[in-house]
Structure formats: C-alpha cells, structure tokens
Length: 205
Image (tube, rainbow, N blue to C red; front, side, top):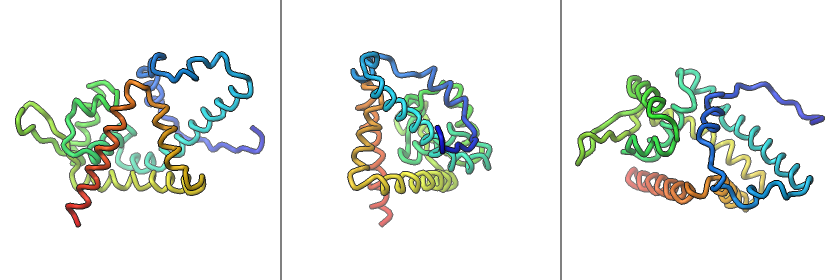
C-alpha cells in the first residue's frame, strides 16, 4: 500500500491461536458472509479493506494497555479478567470462563497470579460455599480503570472524528460481528455492566 508506513508492533500469538480454536461456527455467520463467493471483486476488496482496518485498529487499541500490563508481567488475559470482574462485581468463575472462551487451566493460571498479587479477591457464595465469587480489590480496580481509560480515550477520539451518529453505528456493527448464538447474551452482559456501573456511581454520590 503506497504511502502507508506500518510500525512494527508486538502481535500476541496466544490471542491468534485462541481465536482459531474458538472460531465462530459457520452457521452463526450472517447470510451475506456465508454467500461471499457470490460477491463482486469490488465488494470483496471493500470487505477485505475492512478486515485489514480491523486488524490495525485492534493492534493499536490493545497497544496502550499492553505497555502498562507489561510493567506488571501481565498479558491480555489478565486485562480481560480485571475488566469483566471490575464491571461485574461478584462474578462467578464459571461465568467468566463462558465469557472469555479460554480453558479452565488458562483461567486458573491467570486468576492465581491476580489473586496472589492482590488485584482480585475471591469470596465464597452466600448460599453455596463451593461457589467462588470474584471482586477487584482497590489495587485491582485502579489498574482496571487505568487500562479502560487508555482505551476510552482512543475510542472517544475515533468516534468524534467519525461524526454524530458514529457511536450507535459502531455498536450495531460490532454487535453484528458477534455470532448470532452469543449476541443476545453479550447484549445482556453489556447492559448489566452498564446498570451496575450506574448503580455504583449513584451509591457513591
């Protein structure tokens, strides 16, 4: 691509391998994508440009928190655990596994480090003492907010540059990329996180 200079950045191969091992089944793909063989060359190139833009957007979207995480010896799995536990206090380990789509062994390794270093606290369930409920500590909440702040700045700047209706369009686009079987659950999770954050803010006021 003439005129485009691409800086060399670290690509997390674990993320790539995980995406390959947990790929969305073809039955979940939108009909338009399933019929990709029928599209014109121009349409195909337009879609491939979107694929490439998504790659570069994700690369830069993760680069800011990656630099902070590296200082703690953490990776993106640690970031995701901190993010979802911070947004959903009292989250069950089983629910976290379902969200992250990683193996129990991988989550156990990440959780152990976050627990041992005081970023996550674990409590037993009020009714079932075998249940493990997760909460961020003050230390963990600070790190989660710092990482989120870096990504919020990048998203806010991109939306400002894209026009007044960009936020709603971006949400619809991103939701459309999610497999149909998971879409409703993701919408519910995002709504729950938003309500929990608003409730927490109201309690602090």
